[in-house]
Image: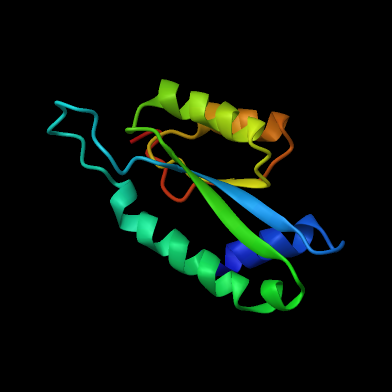
Length: 126
């Protein structure tokens, strides 16, 4: 994942100091009363913090740039995931990471917004 962040950040801009914000779509929480959702986002959520920190203290930081991220909880529900994808776009994200359960509609939106999307797990067709 770290390498993907570096590639994205390096291709986004070679201008003056800039902070690139990643929209992180995750299913790491359950809705109140839901005792069954397995929360697959818990597996990767710690990794994104570590990866962003390493990128910021590496070559990207040396060039005067930095990464940041905004977490958008989807609860593993496609409609919420699509809504969060649009919401993150209004917050001027530079790229998306996730979601994990669904990605088809979210990927169409990312493409329409001309933003890269790295969907780290997708269970389409399973």
